[in-house]
Amino acid sequence: MAKLKAGIIGCGGIANGKHLPSTQKVGLAEMVAFCDLIEERAKEACEKYGTPNARVFTDYRELLKEDLDVVFVCTPNRSHSEITVAALESGKHVLCEKPMAINYEEALKMVDAQKRTGKILSIGYQNRYRPDSLYLKEICEKDELGEVYFAKANAIRRRAVPTWGVFLNEYEQGGGPLIDIGTHALDLTLWTMNNYKPKYAVGTTYHKLNDQTRSGNAWGDWDPEKFTVEDSAFGFVVMENGATIQVNASWALNSLEVEEACTVLCGDKAGADMHGGKLTINGVSCGRQYTMNPDFKAGGAAFYEGNGSERPQDIENRTFLHAVLGKGELCVTPEQAACVTRILEAIYTSAKTGQPVYFD
Image 1 (cartoon, rainbow, N blue to C red):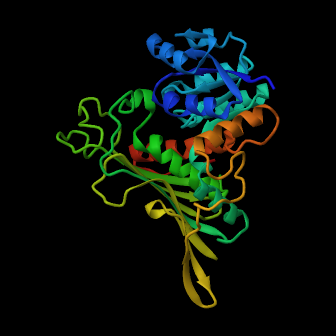
Image 2: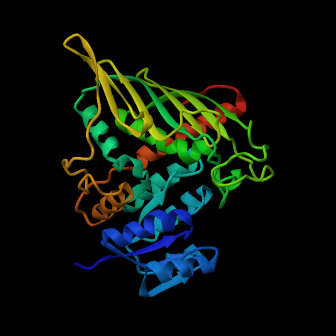
């Protein structure tokens, strides 16, 4: 079977660390076009991952004129919507890196473009494909937790501020840890709950550590003058059915409760949490409290397109490309990802205004 022809826009860290290696490993598509504002970066990626006749571009519009089936969008958050809409309208299927867009308005443009063109669009929330996430989703679908009425979306680092690229640039990214890593935790929480109907949100953001030096940061001291985004953000979201979600996100918090892309679900039958990198189910059976930790080292049933032992990013790649080929369904839909962006924007807006944000 002939491989799909793929192009990538943005050849930085997420492209080289995730999408390009996964595309190569999965083997359903070949990389024939590379684009980056820094031409040398595109050339380096092309030499490592491209076909012999692959082409390099510095303008994404030129890349989109190529004969391509799919495009990976791996640029700063601000340009996600613009590039994705253009790619869809040029007849390409798109896998866009998270978050979907810099705000809800831009996310809706992407949803509309997908509907108009009929092309496949998915967003890079690879944490859904972890064995623990898939197991938790399955027991939720079987109603083993019952009605989940309280949840936490946790993405907390002690001192791990990304100091490279444009992570600290509010204009390019739209925010800091909330939109960067909080988005993964919120997506995971909404997906396992299967609840995408928010009623209102309240939020706070903090710039308490931005100006510190000798910070003890995992990736070296940050430049206080460039650290324009929040260092921590917290949200309180009430859903239409009355469920409550706490959203906790930080790159630098003086806390030992460190965990990333984790969720806590509390239902009226049982509960689940991912504390310490280990999924624990808790409940009551025969009048006794119990906890249970599933064994993910042993073989298990296939998860979507994978076998349970593959890397989440590889399963994400295969699931997306199989959807393009008509051999399977998407796991992450545009509408779901747009809801995540909508809630994140509401938390930021509430933090700025000091008022709750009500959803229509």
